[in-house]
Structure formats: C-alpha cells, structure tokens
Length: 209
Ligand SMILES: *[C@@H]1O[C@H](CO)[C@@H](O)[C@H](O)[C@H]1NC(C)=O
Ligand SMILES: *[C@@H]1O[C@H](CO)[C@@H](O)[C@H](O)[C@H]1NC(C)=O
Image 1 (cartoon, protein in one colour):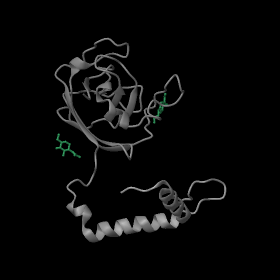
Image 2: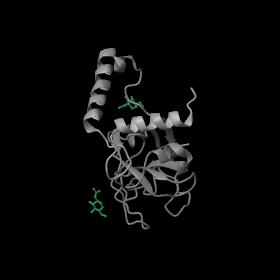
Image 3: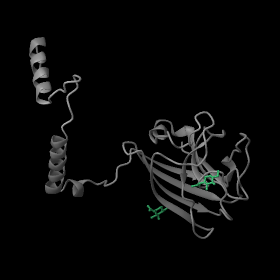
Image 4: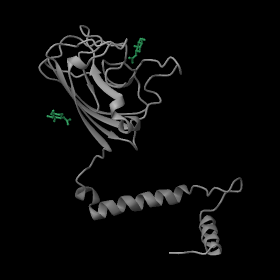
C-alpha cells in the first residue's frame, strides 16, 4: 500500500489522538486499563483455542547447550593448564530464554568426589572466558548432589545473578549486570565447571562451544 505524505500525517495524528498524548511531552500515555483488557483478551483467546495444548514446546528456549566437561580442559585462575580429577566427567545441559533472562540447567557429574570448594556462592559455574583462558564466574548453580557415580542438579535461575565474587572494576557482583543473551551471542566465550577441595581450579571443565 502507498500513502501520500499528507495522508500519512493524517493517519499518524489520528493514532496519536487515540493514544491521548500527555501535556508534558509528545509521547502517548500508557493506558493501564487498555493494557489489562488486551492481556485478558489474549489469555481468553489462548484458553478458548487451546493454543497451549497445540504448542509442542511449553517452555521456550532461544538456545540449548549440551556440554561435555572433562578434567583435561581445566585452566587455573592464573591461566595455566591444571588437570582436574582423573576419570571424572560432567554433562552440563542448559536452556536459555533471553526475554526472561533465565537459564535452566540439568547437570550430571560422574566420578567427582569429595567436598565442593570455591570462593563463589557455589562451586558450579558458568565463567566468561575463551577455551584455554581463565575468567570470572557469571552464574553460580546449586552444586550437583548424590552418590559420586552420579551427582545431579537441575532447575532454573533468573537474573540478576549472584556469584558472591566481586568485579574489581565496578565493585559489583560478577553476575549482577550479566545477561544470558551474552552467552547466546558468543557461546565459545564461556565455559562451565565444578570445583572441589582437591581440585580447586576445577574437577571438570567444558567450553559451551
Ligand atoms: C536431566 O537429564 C537426565 C539425563 O541426563 C534425565 O534423566 C533427567 O530426567 C533430566 N532432568 C530434568 C529435570 O530434565
Ligand atoms: C559470600 O561470601 C562471604 C565471604 O566473602 C561469606 O561470608 C558469605 O557467607 C557468602 N554468602 C553467600 C550467600 O554465599
């Protein structure tokens, strides 16, 4: 469709008039009642048309990761290769929803023994660093629990994230300003790991891509 300039002006001013500009500026005011009505209509539509039932996915992830973590990938905080626990391995599965700044996790460790240990709030993390490099934790997950043959941890976390480690430059928590969209944008810039008392630099580590 093609509109002449005057026609467009007419259309635009008509729509602005409907949205009732405020006196203080030109922005249309936000009509709370209309918003509520729209939300209810949307919900009623879904209810009546069984939209949720028809959808295959009830939880939406922009991106999913399946990461194999091994002892040989561990790098110390000084940036030096420092092998983790011999024979240990981990499968770290993640699902990320960008709009909700939410990450769901399903972590299984096998052959990781002894107590967890870390300066951070937990000892199971996503850190920001390329392969072979060290970097700060951005997300701290509840540590996998269970027998040493199969320790598991699953659930979801939503930002702002808390690692209990401080960014020296900002004085804020390393997770505070972190958004999961950064992982989706550059997965190879992130790794995941678990630290134990015997393998403080990491028992296993895996790069997200
Ligand atoms: C986690 O993954 C394991 C398989 O590795 C599966 O058996 C289990 O059901 C998953 N847990 C959740 C909460 O999805
Ligand atoms: C955070 O770390 C401090 C020590 O630096 C500790 O006293 C505190 O218990 C930790 N809090 C959590 C929730 O991990």
